[in-house]
Length: 559
Image 1 (cartoon, helix red, strand yellow):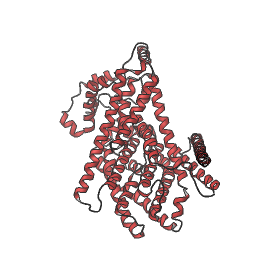
Image 2 (image 1 turned 30 degrees about the vertical axis):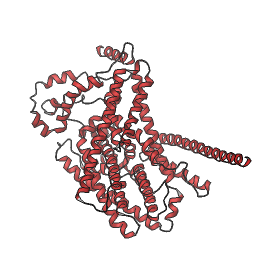
Image 3 (image 1 turned 90 degrees about the vertical axis):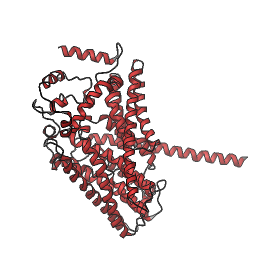
Image 4 (image 1 turned 180 degrees about the vertical axis):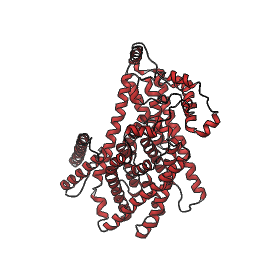
């Protein structure tokens, strides 16, 4: 009896010690997050630094301190977990990107984005995989054919988080929509390719296997997008019909957040691309649901989603910096540092070549279907190529999945791939990230001139585009322009009636994006918004904040 009681006390003591260590680690990590935010704010005007690089550097410095304190046994406070990344950190980042993205720019360049994100990623995957087979087989790393193809999928994944930190949506709207839109499709494509490599029998690669891969990607793309749209529309319909705001704005905010996260987890449950699902859920929610809530809920949701995304981004980079000094991984390759450096250099070279192999040719093909003012110039192509060279947490998570078991590795070849992945992520994020800001300022004109050159449509009444789009300022109202109505719409539409409009078929051939947009707007205003709500169809009750804001605007308009 005494022995059992002593054993129980010992277990409780160990448990208490473990809990105390976890609490200490979490406290230190939260303190580091605060430090990253403060230092990032102080470096806001620096032309070289951004918050992702700041978090990486702080993470590395913290890792060095922990190594010194523990005597070289440990370098991080938390153990890297793929579930932590894919289930908790990535959803708010991708959802907020869809929620805040300028939809007009995104859908105007949707074909180019899909071309870069799907076809481009496939080209990059093939080049990196063939390069890995060619070079790494000579190094005798002990990797199988599946590992080489997995390397192609791992390093074909650009890092949307890095891109969001570097480019500004307001200063360079076209570039932002292209690079970020491509990044979302790219991440989804890379994850699909990675899963396909693991699920298919690669010992007998044939035409049927290749067709199955293509069919699987199309299925995932369509169903994942549809799930995100349905989740967004469902949230809009529920909030519009029940109108939670009449009793509690907290319920409105809660239902939006939970529906968004539910869409992501449903996609994971159904083995779909959760990245695409939550991204399109964010777009639909910003178009319909956001306009159905009270004014206070609009402000709350906008800043809540942005804050969660911001903290998740800093958390990821901070941890990547600490994990880079994990002594266990580097101990396995201590006897062959030249091999690790060679593998890292080869991977960086393949990333550079693989991205160039599709950005410039696909930009040329895309420009063939565009007018002169819509074409992607060579300087813009260079910027798109450079901004997509960074690799981040997505690549790390996939590499851990392929080459480790529970965060640990016992094989020399796998250890080299893990350390090389960490080195590529650090080098690309810090070096390429530092150069991206000055490169954008060097290659591109000022923001106002840039907008006039590549973001504006002709406004002459003789242009056949004007009657098709209606008023140039009408297509979409961004989140920052809430409760603003363009009073010029009616005058512009009346003036457009005197302009002869080309036939729908001829217009579809010459300007397919604008034609689809025109008929979508008619369908959206005629059916979607009356059913699901949105700008111009906002439900309100007497005395609600929305009604007050509408009356206030009407009073200002009269004056």
